[in-house]
Image (cartoon, rainbow, N blue to C red):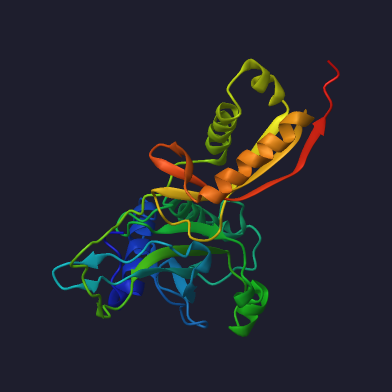
Amino acid sequence: MKNIIEPDNAIVEVNNALNEILSQYLNISGQKIDIRFDLPEMESIPSHPTVSVFLYDIHEDLQLRSAESRSYCPSSSTLLPGWVNINYNYLITYWHSNKPSSDSANPDSQPDNQAVKVMTCVLNALINSRQLPTIPGAYTRVIPPQENLNSLGNFWQALSNRPRLSLLYSVTAPVKLLNIKDAIKPVNQIFSSVNQKSSLDNLQINQALAEKLYSDLGGTEDVRFALIKVNLKTEFHTKDNESQENKNVILKVSGVTRSDYVSRIKDILLAWENSHSAVVKISNTGIIIVEGNSKELIGIEDNK
């Protein structure tokens, strides 16, 4: 984020921005409205109608905590300062330049009295300035009474003063953290390697071995018919299987075939296992049968 408030001027910049927007809306023709950033003396009466802007609370806004990472400066090999969102809470009140009157016919007791008119201008200033022009990234809102003020009635009682028309205003603005030099070792070399792995899957191996079995049994139509319900299932062996030239697999044969084919199939499986060499090749990778299992192969008599 650019143009973040410097930590040494954070409160001053927020006060100045708030003073600027209030001044624009309190420029009432024929009236001088003072703006002050403290509470007037309780027993005194201001010489002019006054809007008091009192900053009563500052804290980090954890709900708007940013996840943006700190930027890196290559020339100095350091991380640039980060930033946090700080919340400023204001109590804004109107102070009349006249003493309160006991006469109900007094203009200050009417629905359109001076306090209401001035605070209406203040409200318009606040709700029409959701963002502060001089502080990019700032967010503002008019808020309800806060717990840290207890209650406004108790607040005024503690100040030995009568209650006044008030607004609570909150500003959240980003503040740059102190420039702590975090040295980061630059990356001088990038290295990467690719370990090529076999693209073979068990379905390819199963199909290739099924064709090999068909061929070793004679490759006739009778053989094809005998193998219709014979299933070949393979899985890669867990040891010594890093080579790209050959892959060791475990072969399981199951299903149903004619009785005269059962022994022939088992003999072929045993021959494959004892050869300790590739039975078939798929994409230049040899398939070696390290273990065969045909216990679930069932033979049935041919009734022809």
